[in-house]
Length: 437
Ligand SMILES: Cc1cc2nc3c(=O)[nH]c(=O)nc-3n(C[C@H](O)[C@H](O)[C@H](O)COP(=O)(O)OP(=O)(O)OC[C@H]3O[C@@H](n4cnc5c(N)ncnc54)[C@H](O)[C@@H]3O)c2cc1C
Image 1 (cartoon, rainbow, N blue to C red):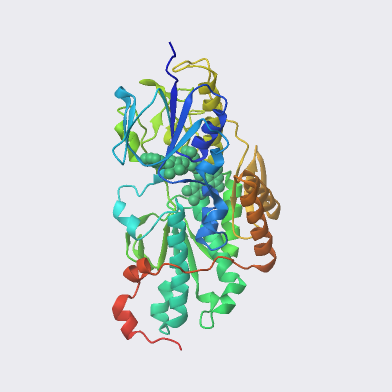
Image 2: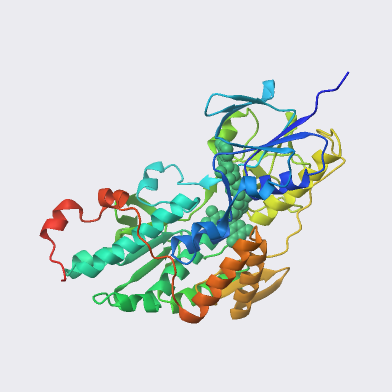
């Protein structure tokens, strides 16, 4: 009698999910990967889409195309709504139930507004392609409007950018916007004086890049200040309203407010009745399974696993990728479930962040670099990490072009609907504000 084949289901086609699926190529099990989008996204370069340097297609690839050569893997584009761990099934948003023998949850993280979800409307985070495109549209549209508005008081917020959170994403966004302000793009705007552009990087803690050694945080801060960014430290945001960030007793009027402060685990994990940390990540065993359910594994940004010093592993792409590779091998080998014979060990190869064009900081196994050398290192590693030869080649060419010309290739405004609704000045301003001709 034929025995039923094992069914391994992976939720999430991000760094962890794709690495798991790729390591399961030669397994005897049936494998299904489910993602709410049809593409894998290289999030570390999203800020370059938001700041009009790269196109979405440069940093994303269809999951089907990535796994296409492996006929064993079934791809489903659908959102998972609930995990029914006792029944070994998943509920999809279209009402379907998917049964699994082993489940890998690699569903990443989402932005944490620390109990102020209402701020998300006015200070979007950068997590998906659609987030990046919305931010890009808003940046470009507010420049177009600033070009037309004569009144300096009304024009000021249109040329002000407030980025909240001094981690790598905030630093990279602030640096990239500062580069735009300095670049030849501004020659195309006759009425905007680049000196009128204000960029704030607002950080609640005493330093930026707090996951990096202090000297690199300081170097990054100095590079940003040189680019004209106002770095506000020890400055918690108290409230965000439409086009206004409140800090202490002051407020900053800015048409472009971007949230890059902290992450939390997706709500889907709450449907498992298991131990979670303060930001909702699941506490996992050293082999990445959940103590209560040995056939369910959590990896990447959704998992809480501590290193030898008791510090949770950081929410970084290499952590998710290494965990995916480890788990793929573990699951491919046998029917092991809760075995503690295998223990995941993270190999920290270093961390990097870039600050505008040709500047970066890097901490590679205790060796600290800053400036142009760190930027070349950052560029090289990021190009190599992109999936697909076509993407690598295109990003390489774009970077060479940007490096020598200071030009931004993707300055198209394609969707005005969202902007008109949320426009700073609204209808009345359109009627009453004096415009340049
Ligand atoms: C703007 C930005 C910049 C970053 N820069 C860096 C960097 O420079 N270096 C670095 O190492 N890391 C960086 N990171 C962090 C890095 O991207 C994450 O650590 C990494 O993506 C985590 O991998 P993951 O597999 O856990 O999740 P992800 O890669 O986020 O993948 C999660 C997947 O799950 C899918 N999903 C989620 N919920 C559901 C559901 N309910 N149903 C179906 N599918 C679902 C999502 O669509 C997504 O495809 C950055 C992140 C961001 C947002």
